[in-house]
Amino acid sequence: MWHTPGRIYNEKNPLDAIKVAKKINKPLTIVGPVLDKIYFKSIIESEIGGLISYAGHITSSSLDDIYSRSEIILATALWDEPFGLVYVEAMRSGVKVFGYENAILETLQFAPEKTIVQKGNMKQLVEKIIQFSDLIGD
Image 1 (tube, rainbow, N blue to C red):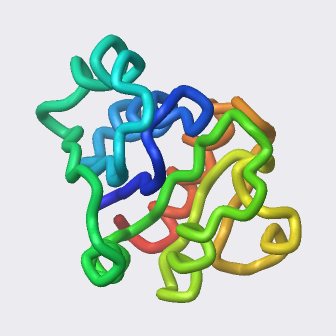
Image 2 (image 1 turned 180 degrees about the vertical axis):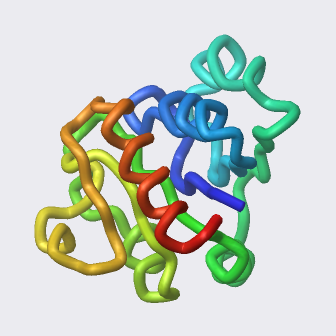
């Protein structure tokens, strides 16, 4: 199971996470509160179903449960993430984080639990995830 936690709005870019999951044919759960209802209704809602689910806003203890069931976390924000607490928590839990270089705090970019690619380079992100999946025999 893959997850993309965080607030739901355009700059957090859950759409790229959805596209990556569909391209590799892996289930993805989007987790977090909807901040931009128009964006959610017009872009994200139609993508939910099949491999893609939406868990809504959850508590911190529920987020720990999500991490314990996650193979990877996707970090596909389009803006320069000022901190990215969910990615720190995921890495602390031993979950591998894949994402765009701007979505993962620069000081965390050397952590072994993450793989970064150039901002918006979905093709490279897919390639890195496939390499990782081949490595672990998934």
